[in-house]
Image (cartoon, rainbow, N blue to C red; front, side, top):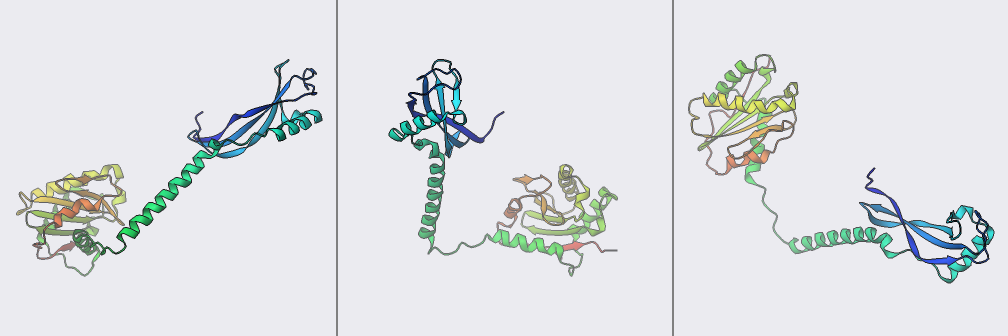
Amino acid sequence: MFFLFGTNKSKLKHKYFLKNCKCPVCGQLNTLDGSVTGRYFHLFFIPLFPAGKEKSAKCSHCNSTINEKSFTPEMKQEFMIASAENPNKTPFWHGCGCLAIVLLVLVILLSAAYVWFKHRHDPPKAEDYRKVAFNADEKKLDDDSLVPLDSISVDLKNCLDNRFNDVLEKDKFRYFCKINQDRVLVLLKIEDIKKIKADDRHKLIPIIEKCLNNIDGLAGKEVYIGVEGKWNMILTSSPMKEDLDGSFADEDILYPFYDTSKTVQMDSVIIKSKRK
């Protein structure tokens, strides 16, 4: 099994001849060589930090490997004396990954501090006027005080009522239409959109487009469509791009509708079906 995170080990440099010690397995004298293994944690096989050391000894006569728990008192004493004279230090590279992470964090922090220091006196950037205009129009979908008089929305509502039948609560749909020269913006809010599976919601856009094609005065205009659920925009479509995921749609796709300041608005910007 492939593990991205775990421990590994490597033999350290120095070995120790354990003189006057018998092998606990075969009983031979002076056949033991002691060694130290360094363990370390790794991520993607890159060493992060040391995880301790392990002592062991190997017999040259029977090839047995004896771990530290099985050392005889003589082996422990001889190992301690030999390692004190020539200690095995933890290699630097056992912790190089951790050091690299620390350095990376420092570089990011210093870079962020440099950018802030360099631009600290810059005037604040103005918010995209298109975003401001869109947010203002989107909020009108929730304005209960507006009267449903917009002719485009009336025609669109009549068309959608015939197509949706009883799948959704059509009398709770909210509509917003706006014309900007050769562009038309249509925003539609469907609070019970959850009744339609996310994978099938993209089919709403072609239905709306077909309805708009049958409305007088919209021929040849670029169409921008946004469909909002109960909490957020779920579908957006424009002549250049579309986001039809059905869950969370990119509102920026609709911003080009506002590219010019000269906007001609319908008699009433919103239509909302009367609630029963």
